[in-house]
Image (cartoon, rainbow, N blue to C red; front, side, top):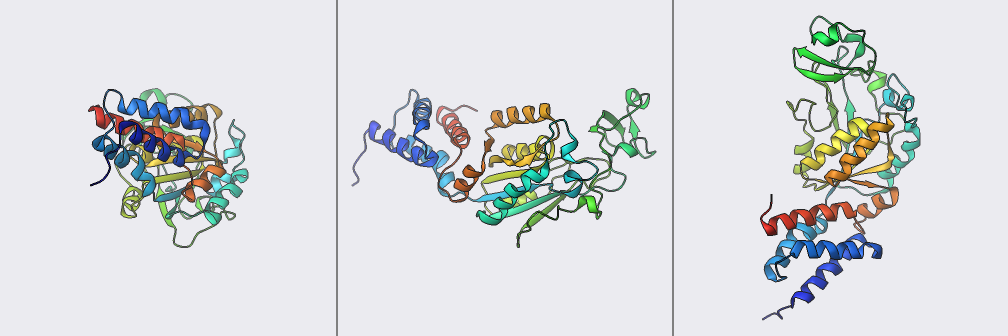
Length: 316
């Protein structure tokens, strides 16, 4: 018969295991607060310990990771929709060595590249906004349109759309992954935005949520529970892809050094969304620690402790 641990002994063991996950003594006070909020008016016993281990600790012991490189394509690097032309004044080429380091030197269970893959008359293209096969809302029909305007289409699909210069046309130079980007043997490729009338910022689904890509199924098939993202543009396709990853229940983070954005304001909004959803914004060092299973973002631990707390106390 095993020795029955006291409440304090169980709590101390949970604290010890959490501390090993973050590998940073400065975070110990926050970890202690998490433990107190988790248990609240309950007691540490076999049942509460089992719940805490299952929801909080087990995902790290069974961690399987996917590196997702979003839309590192010619048009976004130096082509018709170059990121460096945005007001954030960020150069995608500065992200390239960091992305290649993630691809070449770190270990992930799977690697996925996504690509915008638009037909030549795509709904997002400013040059085709008045094509006869689509209809703008009355307020947009009557005004002069410019690139980056936001319009509303009423036909054939009702959708709000930002108008961009033509970019990433299927099979063209602009749609190809940048020549300097490392290709990893055995990697997977997701092409998105191929529907003429519906855009797709996220690598998981189109903007209307009508059609899902094969990405979620691919991740589930490979028992992935954590997504590490980087690429272009930070505030558009990377942001929407990682938002969806989080919604699907994956532990999610963005490697900041490997991601560049168009708009300073939109990047700030993306960061606020990441914070709200528990998506960690990490540096190269943390990416390396995750790949080695040596330490993990505190945001992931907060998220899982919150889930465990809700389960223990019957909250939704």
